[in-house]
Amino acid sequence: MLGNIGTFLSSGENIAFFVFALMAIGGAIFMISFDKVVHMVCALALTFISMAGLYVILDAEFVAFVQILIYAGAITILMIFGIMMTKHQGEEAEPKRPVHNVLLIIGSLALFGVLFYAIQNVTFPSGEFKAAEDNTMEIGKLLFNQHVIPFELMSVLLTVAFIGAIVVAKREED
Image: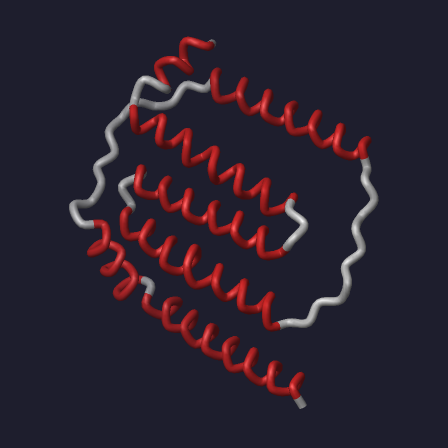
């Protein structure tokens, strides 16, 4: 069983996958466990950036670029600005719950054990994946030919949401 781990870690691509996956999981865990909201957003940005690394490993460079540009850049900055521009009341600290933390650790280890066992005993089909020569061109063709209506509806939805956010913000000032 441990021989499979040795063969898995013999490739640099697999090691990079393992590092990016651990960073994504770690960022997600930090995001839900930090107390300060700005620290939570920074942990979320780490998760977004590590997801972009996973996309690069999958030869989806365009998706990785968009992940960094939109999520790690724009969404994270938007969240930080939203936090800084809103008023916060004094937040009460939650009481420490040691039993809850012990159960959380036991459940996490049990889930890890089940997933580890399942991954070690599965047989993956062998075969070669033939990626397109230019991923960005293929995404553009699909987006503007086959999926143009949902793309335009999404842009209208985002514009309406942006205008609604401005209206709500103006009402709060008055």
